[in-house]
Length: 330
Image (tube, rainbow, N blue to C red):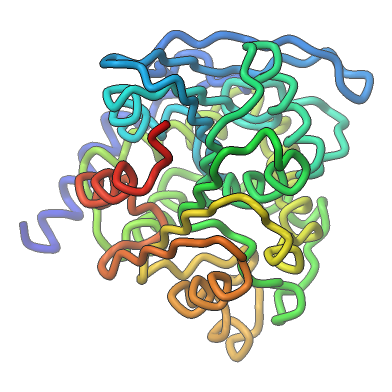
């Protein structure tokens, strides 16, 4: 399809979905499997953590994979990968972290990767899961690293898909925004802005119709009546990402690690706010991945030459073939 045709198709599809508005906990947006809730108290907040728990479809291998979503993603965006893993015999647990998607968005919460890791560990313990393969994408990759560092005996294998945090952005020139700065930025979020960012970063300039529902998933919360609390939690989470690097601890990872990245990924938190000279130095994933692989003790690095930030969505067949070949089987 010619470029003009692609733009017209995207515009028509966006207009069809544009009026969807969701509550702060994403009511009205359907997930691929029943959504359950883990209710717990944290920092004097009564919270609910939404999650899906998909049993193996085929012969069970008695292994569990926990899928951790990224900043602009939800548990539902793991649908394709979860189906492949379930069919291969894995139990798959897919949480929405606090502050995201169908989970609680408290007015006051001290977000740390340690806290999110602890929340996830408590969820798994409640399900009787004491050891699992921890797989994280994007910001979920940063969380997966923190989880593995905190709970090495509970982590059978660490799988990182285009994890952010392979560099320290603030040392490379990304200015401090602060929670207030991020909040103002997040209040301006629209489906057009989300779509343009995802096309250029996640999908290396390409676009497929099936990506649009993930754009509307996010944009719908910013069109809804609770957009202020959605934006506020998003701002708190961006501040967490910026101020809590895992970069300096990569060498402390003890678990067998699979690092999978798209060569055309250029993600760097706050890159748009950096000076042009600094911006040019950020988000070079092939370089960052190779440098990380030299520091992580037991690592297997896979680079997808034509993929961006989300190879599991952009090149699913190729990605899942490699993933299944390198996952622990028993």
